[in-house]
Image 1 (cartoon, rainbow, N blue to C red):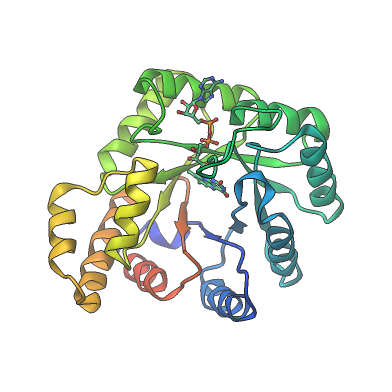
Image 2: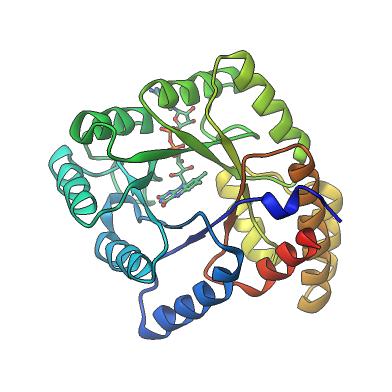
Length: 280
Ligand code: FAD
């Protein structure tokens, strides 16, 4: 039994559902995850505001259920005016936490918008709303795929912290050393905010490989080969995924991470098993 596990805080990330069925599924997912007393539920935001209304509806519903909701907000393809209106709307609805991102440019679309990088968005949020919001930003233990170098990426991360970010959530990883090294380097660079590991459960190899190719999160060779081999045998794939991710969480908890943030993809079953594993 892990002695630290009882004290561990969890947060869960969702995407805003587009259909009635999706909304009902997410309600059920939240019902299941509520047993873990989440610190907050966060809801993603399509670059350029493509999910603006859906994100807003989802965070409001979460808030009505009595949980803290953290809308993601991305600056790519958005004007200052649009962002300012969105911030005012979140503030008027009593939201106190935001996940501030650059976002990714949808393929085929030009990168319009008033800001190029998340540090500018963080500075804008502070300028517009002072200390109203707790601002989370993204961090990349395995380096953001567009970065010219690991040290450049670290200094870009520091720029977000200097602009006023309160804490960070990492891109997912399966190699705990990448996270430990990153946190050490942050410490040496004078970055003192909590850096919460982002945890991606393994439910579907094709989807995971596609995400990982895009975001630069490495699936270690041994794990990739084993997952690939399962083919359509989803039961075995998920069983291995649960073992690997539970072990990763245990290693992180033993290292005294601030909390764990799960990328749920709006599903609760695998995550519930993982948390029950690490809590027992
Ligand atoms: P930035 O911090 O701006 O960094 C992007 C790249 O630019 C990096 O390579 C960095 O090194 C470089 N850079 C940063 N600042 C500068 C600068 N001033 N000058 C030059 N280069 C610079 N995407 C969505 O669209 N919606 C979401 O809801 C969403 N949620 C996410 C949640 C988490 C926890 C994470 C980790 C990612 C999420 N993403 C989301 C993906 C994110 O938008 C992408 O990873 C995006 O490519 C980078 O966003 P960022 O905020 O880290 O950007």
